[in-house]
Amino acid sequence: LDLVARLQEAISRSEFELFFQPQFRATDRRPIGVEALIRWRHPERGLIPPAVFIAICEDSGLIVPLGRWVLREACRFQQRMAAAGWPQVSVAVNVSALQFQSGHLVEDVRLLVAEYGLPPGALELELTESIVMENSDAAITTLQRLRDLGIVLSIDDFGTGYSSMSYLRRLPVDKLKIDREFVNHVDQDEKNAAICESIIAMAHRFGMKVVAEGVETLEQLEWLRKHQCDALQGYVLARPMPFDDMLAALGPGK
Ligand code: G
Ligand code: G
Ligand code: MN
Ligand code: NA
Image 1 (cartoon, rainbow, N blue to C red):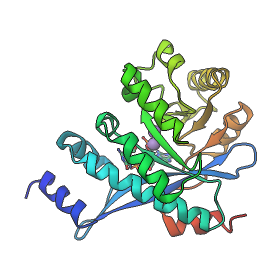
Image 2: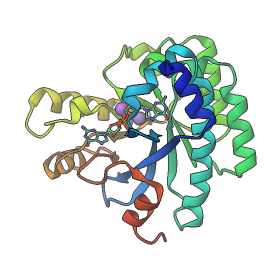
Image 3: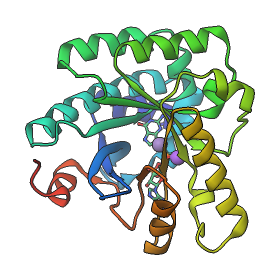
C-alpha cells in the first residue's frame, strides 16, 4: 500500500489527533492562545510527526480534507477550552497553501463559526509568507473575509520566506510569528537580536502583535520580554501536548 493510499485510509479511520502548545503573554505569562499541531496515531508505529506526512498530503491534495478535519477539531477544542474556564484563549490552526487557495476556506470557516458559536478572536489561522505574499487581490479578499468572520490572522515562520515590505504593508493580518531560527540564541547572537528587534518594531508600527516561537531558554524569554515581544511559545514554557495534558498544565481557568 503506498503512503498516499494509507494516508487516505488514516483520514477515514480517524487516526489523526491534535496536540496543543500554549502561547503566553510575555509580560505576565498568562496563557493567551494554543496552537493545534497534528499527529498521526499509527496503530503499529505509534505517534508520527507532521514532518513525515504533511508534504505528502499537500502534493496529493489530501491536505484539503485533512485540513477541514483539523479546522473542525480545533473549533471543538476551542469550545472545550471555554468550558474549562479559558474562554479568552484562542485556538490557532496551521493552514496549507492548497487549503487557502481551494476556494472553500471562507465558507468552511463561516459554517464552523456559526455551528460552534465562536466569538471573535476564538479561532486563529496561521499562514505562511509564501501563501500570502503572492498578494494577489484574491488572496487579500480571502484574508479580509476571514477577518470579517472574527478570525485572527497570523503569518507563521516570519522572516524565512519571501517577505517583501511592500506586500506586508498591504496585508490585513494581526500577528507575525518570528521563526525560531531567529529566536534561537537571540540573547547571544547580535544578528538574530537585530532581526528580532526590527520585526518587533515594524510589526508594532503596523499595528500587529508579535509572537516568538521556539523559545527554549529563560535567557531568550527574558530578552524577548525586555524587547516588547507580545507573546512567547516554546519548549521552555510548554511543549505540544494532548489536550487534557495541556489543560492540566494550564491549571484551573479563571
Ligand atoms: O508539531 P511539529 O513541530 O512537528 O510541526 C511541524 C510542522 O508541521 C510545522 O511547520 C507545522 O506548521 C506543521 N503542521 C502541524 N500541524 C499542522 C496542520 O494541522 N496543518 C498543516 N498544514 N500543517 C501543520
Ligand atoms: O511551523 P510551525 O510554527 O507551525 O511549527 C511549530 C513546530 O515547532 C511544532 O512542530 C513544534 O513541535 C515546534 N516547536 C515548538 N516549540 C519549540 C521549541 O521551543 N523548539 C523547537 N526546536 N521546536 C519547537
Ligand atoms: Mn505554526
Ligand atoms: Na513556525
